[in-house]
Amino acid sequence: MTLQTTGTGGQALHRPKTTRNTPRPNQPATGQISPGHPALAALSVQQQTQFCQFGTGPSASPDFPLIHQGFEHYAGQQPDACAIREAGGREISYRMLNRQANALATHLQRNQVSRGDSVCLFVRRSIEMVVGILACLKLGANYVPQDMQLCPAQQRSHIVTTVAARIILTTRQYQQAVSDDGAQKIIAIDEFLQQPAGISIEQRFFRAARPEDTAVVIFTSGTTGKANGVQVSHANLVNILLTAPGNMGIRPGDRVAQQLNIAFDMAAWEILGCLSNGGTLLIRDKNIQTTAEQADILIATPSILAMLDASRCHQVRAVAVAGEPCPQPLADCWGAFCDFYNACGPTETTIINTAEVYRPGDPVLSIGRPTPNNTVYVLNDRLEPCQIGETGEMWAGGACVSKGYINNPELTAERYRDDPFLGKGHTMFRTRDLGRWTADGTLEHFGRVDDQVKIRGFRVELDAVSAVLERTENCNQAAALKLNSRHLAAFVSPASVDLAAARQHVLDALPYYCDPLFILAVDELPRTIRGKVDKRALAARAEEHHRQSEISGETP
Image (cartoon, rainbow, N blue to C red; front, side, top):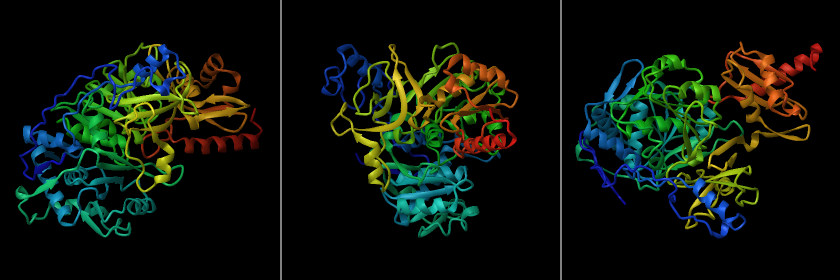
């Protein structure tokens, strides 16, 4: 389906003849799997039924096939409403944001950017950042975001080369810095917007993307090797951002905080999820607390959320966390006064592919069930279904599965496989997360495959140790890691945590080999640039502490 949209500030696409459906439980995702399927032959009839019911998300229809069309709809419906407000007080209406995005899109079009092209967006969080995003989407191009204060020059050059970008969008402040990144042309968005457009944008027409086209390329952090770009399509994005629960119940007038690194996939959840549902995006400065206190909706990693004073954020209506395991105390704190969504999903499955509202007192802090039109399979090493209650590796299927890694067919072939359950050309993605289904259909998460280590010959799940430590009174967050073949080390925060009580929790709940050699209390755990616990930094600190202890003769 090819769509056209006018370049007028106040004109927007008519709303398609689809409705915001309420998800219907236990209906098949974008395909059909049912008991009796040959791929389920190893399971009993009852377990085949459970495998299908538990692992299949509800059916729902997004209102729009392209992610920016929701924004264009609201630009027509509420042109004078505030679209973005920066922490410094600068703001822009839906009408003006649409006009500026149209003007930039026309300028990009004049510079031979067309459908399918990649445009690097090397900026800081700002109104100009969003103008750049929307301009690319309107042309059917994809944007490749990086934060200029956090992304080193070497990685920027790698990204430009990998996506074969001819143009870098930036701002005047960083124009000189990106001049050596390898693109043929650099456009400073703020500088362009201050000049007369020189064309009648009302007379321009942009050929929109198709749903299967790439909307954004999200590069992995590269902490374990070369960063890889994940191609996320319009269909991927609308499926999670324009259906419940991914739309977070955002409606016109709601204020959504934009707090995360723009290179992180969850930042697209904040930005596009807000504007495609008619909300007002609050762009923070260095003070994340101030922005959080003004927001109705927060989307964060648990590590970022733990930095906020929840007692000053009781106006918040809904919070979603993903990206790393959520500490129980954190969920209890926020879940006491707002809808608290605990979610899971790697970048390759489009932000999240499972979610669940948690209430204090719920028996399990679950990562929930598959989101609409998606599937989750718990499989063994032979890619066969695990028994209900058996731990295996989670594979994701359905509409969430992204298009693979840009210009890396080998890695794509390794992590993406044909989906034997949905068939019909569907693919599934290996998440490398461990999980199991309980008898009532709860999906329990046991951390990453990489976080399952051997200590004294016994298998230990590091996240399980962290979760037990977090039961200690006043402990906000904990992290366990492998020190050597015989010992774990652990960290808890804040620094006031009672270390003897923390150790006793581990001794009472887990086998002896899970007892850390030492537990260190810190004010707060270090975070990566994407807002997750920095385990590499913790490992370096643990090794140094162990070395110093051996020198002083204090090692047990």
